[in-house]
Amino acid sequence: MTQSLPKDFLWGGAVAAHQLEGGWQEGGKGISVADVMTAGGPNKARGITDGVVPGEYYPNHEAIDFYHHYKEDISLFKEMGFKCFRTSIAWTRIYPTGEETEPNESGLKFYDDLFDELIKHDIEPIVTLSHFELPYHLVTKYGGFRNRKLIDLFVKFATTCLQRYQGKVTYWMTFNEINNQANYDNDFSVFTNSGLHFEPGENREEGMYQAAHNELVASARVVKIGHNINPDLKMGCMIAMGPVYPATMAPDDVLAAQKAMEKNYFFADVHVNGFYPSFLTKYWARQGFEIDVTAQDEQDLHNGTVDYIGFSYYMSHAIQKNEGRSFDELTMQNSLVRNTYLEASDWGWQIDPKGLRYALNWFTDKYHLPLFIVENGFGAYDKVEPDGSIHDDYRIDYLREHIRQMKLAVTEDGVDLIGYTPWGCIDLVSAGTGEMDKRYGFIYVDKNNKNEGSLARSKKDSFEWFKTVIATNGEQL
Ligand code: P53
Image (cartoon, rainbow, N blue to C red; front, side, top):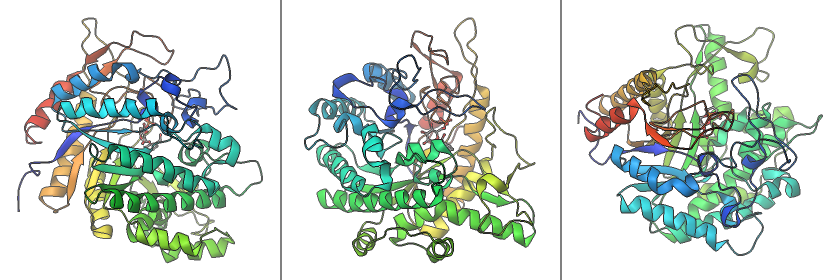
């Protein structure tokens, strides 16, 4: 067995359109769900306003203005040696409300220019079709993905992109972190994933399952269309992976962890296998949930299984079964406990490099598909020294340990891994909190939580470090 990573391993970085482009009204762009979200903080949820309200601060409207800075930024990625760059296509640049019959040419042109610029630098674009960027119009008119109508609208948008960019983009993912919404009590998760907004008294969990189902069908149809358009395209899903460990060796805790994993990762089962696992359909029946799944849907799911699994990995979790709760009542919200073996970031995310090796093996054992780590990274406060340097050794430590475990998964365990694209390779707006000061980048962007700063780019210590990692294909960490 080879003792190093494959020669063509895709090192790079990852971002999402709404978190860095800005230009929220440039080139005919429509309003997306990200455009109506205000800023929060480590202990404060982001607000979701009723449309764009004058006087409110919306951090994604300008973000880091990648829309106008992408050439400069790509040349920095090139300097680091990126082989690939993952971004998303903002649905609202292509179909501003989601309902137009013809795509917006100026939005299409923007991504042509962006992809051409990457390709000119030998950087392969990797594309997510839906990364928390639903047209806001589809929320107000249809109530988001709960409505079946959105399946066709998404398929139309995705087909336009696949046709237009098939010669430039090989690796595609349909819905970013489609499983975040398993956390259905959280307004942010259901809104960003699916444009869901619940009234008091509504069954949030049932609504989430319906929206997720519609997305899974939409995804499967798009996978099939992608293969028909061009059999060389690699059509993938995107899962947020945070393994759930049992808090103790008590069999109840072990089973609790398994049940939590099922509810979080059945999305991957459907993407990969093309049908729902029995634990879920049984659970729906016990709860009296009536999810609208047609015979045609079942056919579509079956015909559109993915080629690879893209996933994010930031942290792991631990769960404890509470005596008073049945397994059905147990959720990540009511039963997670702190893992006393792990440290956490300033935002409470538990740091667990070995969990990445565990996750890679778990996916492999369960699905036997190629994997792609499309997000991993450390959100932290950075300090700019008087001379402009930024000593982000904590970020280097985090990434180094994760890359070590990733390499072990490949070289010792034989995991089939396509590449590694750390999240927020350039500082951008945090999805969860809307902050600029929760930073992930190798490249610093001069802008803070108060919307101050010149937007100037500069290199952190991690920039040179990652450059060496890529140049040595992960040998020198
Ligand atoms: P931020 C929660 C848990 C794990 C990943 O997150 C998550 C979230 C949502 O906040 O999101 C992914 O910016 C997501 C990116 C996001 C990144 O992780 O909250 O795909 O859009 O920016 C990091 O620190």
